[in-house]
Length: 304
Ligand code: GLU
Image 1 (tube, rainbow, N blue to C red):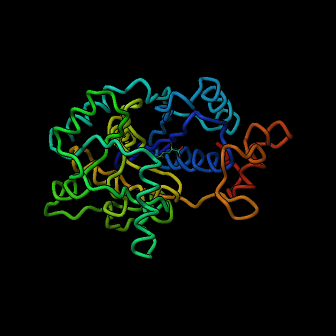
Image 2: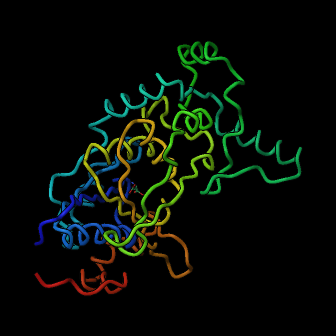
């Protein structure tokens, strides 16, 4: 193993709300093998903030699937559910900066407003990079005092980032951007300009879950000292939000490598609900880890 000239710490961060599929296997292998090549550290993180969908048996299944694949993390997994206080502290910091607000519009309020706006203008409503309509209500529809009293009164809410205010607060001499290693995690990097405005007022927490994917991923990558985030292309655009939150919270921006996605025969992203590509099912059907590698377009396991 070589001694790294610069620290190299990466992580695989599955949500234990189902079994791993071939796409997860690819991501886990990309991380573990980059860490090994670089003499670095490979960490595992269970993204289990959603208590309604995450289950201990799925976590056990993930650990079994990884062990079978030959992917061994260098430390026990970090569980997001054990760190709600850290996310609350980050959210409180953004709140103290005046950058977040409780929003009470339900999913159906939002859907109705989008349909009305599309009918009125005759044009499609603006959408985020994942294709969901941007939050269509301005923060100013309620005063801060009205929001505070509704919240105290128990109305369901989500906490949203005031994107315009956040971008203004984050503006500085350095543009918001991240280093992207295009070909391999340790390869040459190019600077990608972040476009967080494309996401509108994103949700950072909910009444019943006091954090969100965006907020916890940023807090945890910093807490775990991640230097290289290696994950699928499906999260490429979300990086804009992560870079903005890193700037606002005074956290470092790692290097990112967004790898190709593993698609099914009809060209769609794999999903946890499709049992045909779950590692557990493939293994039960007699597949070996080497066959999984071949199917993913990877070289056979390097001999150790
Ligand atoms: N938990 C996310 C997922 O399972 C991955 C998050 C990340 O790698 O940043 O898709």
